[in-house]
Image 1 (cartoon, protein in one colour):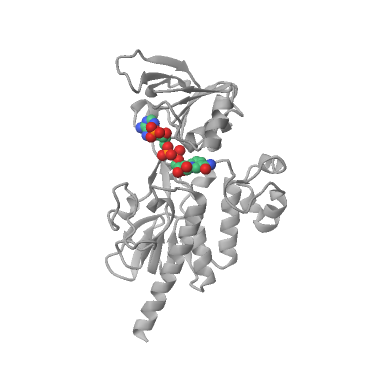
Image 2 (cartoon, rainbow, N blue to C red):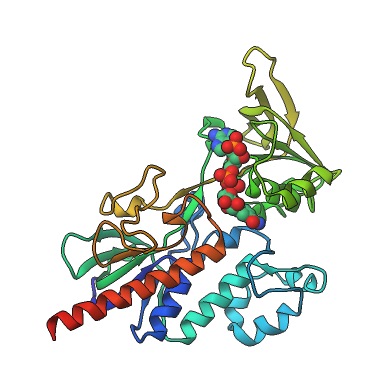
Length: 363
Ligand code: NAP
């Protein structure tokens, strides 16, 4: 069934950028409608489930405002009991020893805060946009249409894959893009695991997987890690982690019955060097992210990195007036939760200013 509503501001996306935009818009009296995305198998396979990338990470240690402390008490008083279920109970056991905030707990707190100020949340994807004339029309995965005077696009980014046929074949049978989601599965317990990549994500996933695996091998195509110093040093010091330098995954080995059983690795620098094989129960791919822009179908201009192009320095304007952008979908440089949250606030302020200017034009 198709329904029509007219909105002052619609936010698309439910990571830190989306919730922050919603909180600012709600407090400005704009009564935002936020599309948080659908909990579908298709989204799971594409690595773009609702609530953003922070839900696929473990503890976030660098988001300001969360020193070591009793998060359980705060979460229980701030978040409704049905939403609390998305945070594993063990997390709270670690409060006293673990500084920071668990990624999905942080996102639930942001969601609760946005709802508290009156944000209405739709658990669907926006699948099509018409930005040709204003007000804009958005169609969602339920077939409903929403009419919007301004839009904030905050759809984030999702995992990139190696592109090997064997990677595709063993997805959900040993190949994963998310250690926090899949690391505790029985198939990985006390068995060797491979992580591919050399950035913060790869190192963080490797450190997390040492909780389950007998050994974690990081396969990196260069001879030094790109990850931040503090994380890189933790990995280099960890006796359970081995780094296989200058290697690339040529093939993920396995069969239909057992899923992944190992990897064949080629030299990334010297093609003539013989390949090596390693036994592994799983391969976690952590080689970066790509912006989630497919649903726009070319409606907004992109930059050379495939991110939505910002058309005004230090502001969140896009190539279409009244469409603003926030977070990793427009950021190939910083890609941090705190930056995304900040840019969400900017986008809401820019949308509010746009609406005020429009109103004064007509007065
Ligand atoms: P990233 O920093 O872009 O690193 C991607 C890694 O994958 C690089 O080491 C890259 O190798 C490698 N790679 C790329 N394509 C590859 C391919 N086809 N085959 C093999 N290796 C490939 O991505 P990220 O680690 O996902 O991090 C993204 C952003 O999020 C960064 O800004 C990061 O700081 C941030 N982040 C922060 C935290 C934290 O602060 N706790 C945690 C996670 C992510 P090269 O090094 O050779 O390019």
